[in-house]
Image (cartoon, rainbow, N blue to C red; front, side):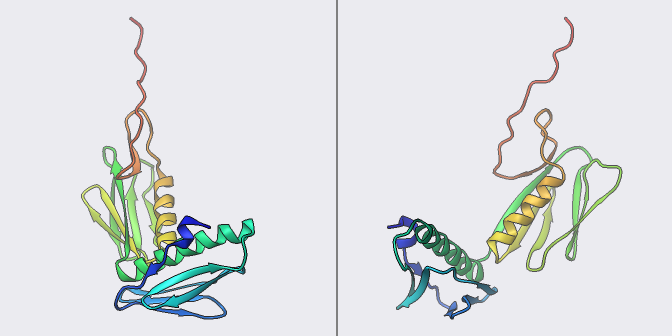
Length: 178
């Protein structure tokens, strides 16, 4: 049995979970998320916990079991607490500013880069750190990845956009003729 799928999902106060034929809807103080339930797995509420069950032990249903449990647990955490991802900008003259649902960045190109944030994602700038927040973990991670891909960090000087917790392996440059 799946170790991840076996764990029950605790439902915090203020979070309502509705399981229907078409999928699962999780509503909380920060918003509402919906997701379709794949065939072969089901959700059941037991007291103040949510249990994920599977129809049989086929390889496909075992993989869906753990995946659905992780996704629903992230939905519950997202609508109750929310998620946050931090990106760091390194480089002389590299900067960013948030203007509504747009992120205006100067990243050493001949033109400014304007990035449109998806619905449900908010950005805040603190010196050289971009702080992205949202309730959907999947969309938040995808957005952070797209922003990082605009100017990934280079290994010689470390210039570019990187995750705050990411460590860039630095390379030694040319030594020159002796």
